[in-house]
Image 1 (cartoon, helix red, strand yellow):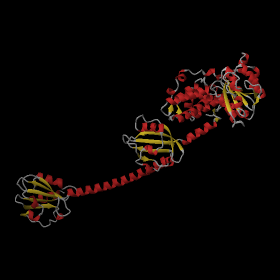
Image 2 (cartoon, helix red, strand yellow):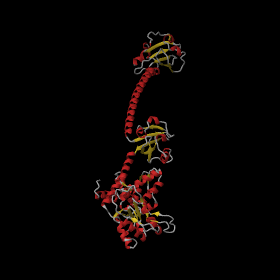
Image 3 (cartoon, helix red, strand yellow):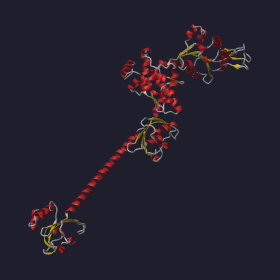
Length: 577
């Protein structure tokens, strides 16, 4: 490299040689020339032959020998760097000009910048090709991951949908076709309510979350009526799309199997309209089965609201007279002056206002069943007439003397202790024996608390369906309070309480604030005051675990006890942990 500088320009000024060294480095191959102020070529060096200048002559015009010089004249007095875009086809160069103190010019033809540029361009092209390959590989991987996720998503019982700010569907998972009977390709661009067949309050509730009128985040339980005629139960979770403001993500879970299973469980726990799986209610159900085929008079005892009329109707419906009349007489609602006429009938003119012959309720129920509800309130004179009906199966209308034969089954119900009424002189002892041939005792609700969750779910579903409310479940705190409440009005009070709560609940979960004040304000009776029955306690725990899907912490909350206490009681009741 030193020789290239020193020969033939070793006598050039140091500044020019320093400049030349910056050009003639590495793999660079410049050609350089010394031209005087008149444009005559004085000396030359470097790789002139490389560029086609093999036979140069000194003291001859440089412009006639080196083609690029002509365009530089006159050279002036200031150093310059001049890029030449077209010097021989396919070649691009930089021309460096450095004046000497004597007025001569040192010119350097540098082709290296373009070579470097070409190399950079080639490197850039190589880098771009590499990046393109990497991008294509990444896209293939992304597509594979997308396909894998799509397959996994479609195997789940979940419909995933993306809505734009106008509520139009921009994405719908393939699972929709199996549930909604709609192809995802056919629904893109359509509004959500055209695809998800929900109506009434269900639609309003879902629209409120989609449009942001209420905060999203709580699952909504809906029933969709599909075009094929079947109903599908779903839970829809509405979320904001984090990628784009105003867009919504819908996760639609098919809960039909759960609801169908729940219906099956409720059906198994239901007997002739009565709900219960406790041991005490199973005894009641079995007594009904045993007595249905007999003609014996049955006394049904139980507190107000326990379902005495339901038991009587179950006996009738399970008997051979199920297609015959079933008449209920509320004895407590009839005055002393009317009860005999209502029960036994009267002849025209038998008393003031008897404008025509009238058959009584016993005759009206001929061939079927009559229930004398609240028989403990029947007046003493009427009790005497009832004895004849029970003993001889015949009635005598008021104003007549001729008895009329009846084929009838008599059931009686009371919330009173008739033995105590006999001692008090309010009820005939012989009548008591006549009506108590068979006896069914209905337990109060506080003695079969394990049935409370099942009753609540039954009433909840019934009233939510009737009112169109989206309520589908009860949270653990509300369930705990209702489990521990005394329910003096028994099942009737529980039914009315659930109906009240459903009316006041706008969401899908019934919470403590939705309960009636008399339930939340009354403290639960101490556990020690209630008799401990291992079988009843076992049923109570099992029912709480079923309602809470096996979650022991939630079950303990429902039962109003600690988790440790729950484990001890499970062990005592021989319930596997």
